[in-house]
Image 1 (cartoon, rainbow, N blue to C red):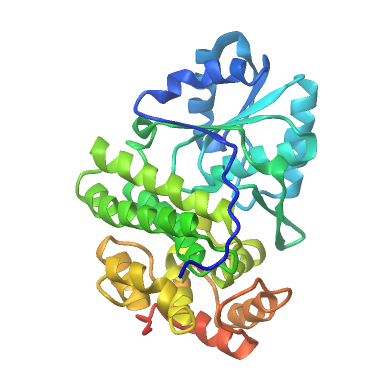
Image 2: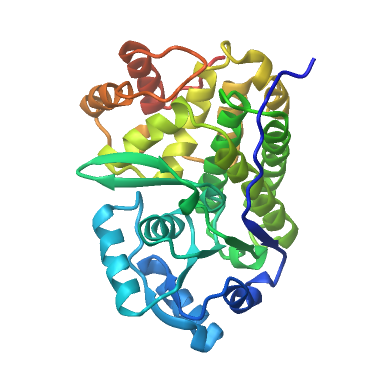
Amino acid sequence: MTQPFSYAGSPARIIFGEGARSQVGQWIEKTGCRRALVLSTPQQRADAEALAREIGNLACGVFSGATMHTPVDVTEAAVKVAAETLADCVVSLGGGSTTGLGKAIAYRTDLPQIVVPTTYAGSEVTPILGQTEAGRKTTIRDAKILPEVVIYDPALTLGLPVAMSITSGLNAMAHAMEGLYAQDRNPISTLMALEGLRALARSLPEIVNAPRDVKARSDALYGAWLCGTVLGTVGMALHHKICHTLGGSFDTPHAETHAVMLPHTVAFNATAAAAELAPAAEIFGGSIGGGLWDFAKAIGAPLSLKEFGLSEADLDRAASIAVENPYWNPRPIDKTSIRSLLQDAFEGRRPTD
C-alpha cells in the first residue's frame, strides 16, 4: 500500500542538451533581465570572460572570486560588485562553489539566477544554501535560493578532469542516497533518486575509460540533475551533516569529502533503512556500504579522510560538532558512534552493512 506523502515539484526551468550554452543570452532576456553579472571561480575566470563576451551587452561584468563552502565575506564582496554594476541577474558558470555564490547573492538581493553547471554537483537545482562564517558551515532553505533557470550542456563537461568527475559524481550520488531514506521522501523523489544513481553508476566508469565520451558525459550530467533535484525536494540527514562539519570547520575539499564519507554514512544507516536502500544496494552488487566503497575504489575515488591532512584529534572535534543540532536521521546518533564512523573513514576501511 502506498504511504501518505506530500510532493511539490521544482519550479526551475531546465534546459538540457549539447550546445545548450548558446541559449544563455536568450534566457537572460526571457527572465526579463538586461544586465547579468557572470560568476566563476578564479580558475574559470577565462571561461566566464568568454561567456560574457558571447552574451555581449547583456553582461555587466565578471566576478571570479567564488570559492569552496561559500564564505560570507566573499558573498558580501560579490553583492557589492552586483550593486556597483547595476546587475539585475547573475549567471553562475562552474561547479558547486560558483553556484553557491550565486545562490548566496540571490538570498540577499533576490536577483534572478541562471546557472550553467560544469560539474556534477547538483546544487543548482536545490533551494538550499550552505555558507561558512567563523569556521562553521550552516544551511538555509528558502525559495529565493532556488535558481530560476539551469542550462545543462554536456559539452562543457568534456574537459572536466577525471578525478574531479569522479568525486563530483559521488557527491551527486550522496544527494540521492539520503533522499531514499529521508523523513519526507515521496514516490517521485525515490524514482528520481534511483534513476540518478543508475545513470551515474553507469556513466562514471565510462568516463574513467573515455573522458571525452559525449554520451557518458551526458548520462552523468543527467544523473546529477536527478540527484540534485532529489536533494531540493526532501530533507538531508547524517551524511550531509558530517560533510558540512568537515568542510565548514576543517576546510576539507567539498566533493572529495562526500566521496570518502558516502559508503560509511550509508552503511551506518543500512539496517535502520534496509527496505528503502534495498533497490540502491542492487545497483552496487547487493551491499550498499561495501558495494559503494568497492565502486568508489574501482573508479579511483579517494577513500580516506587522512588524505586531506586531518588528524585524529580533528576527528574528536568533528564528532562533537556533528552531534550539535543534528539533522534528522533514520538511525539515532551519538558522539561515540559518529567518532567510530569517522575513524573508519579516516583509515579508509571498507564498511560492512
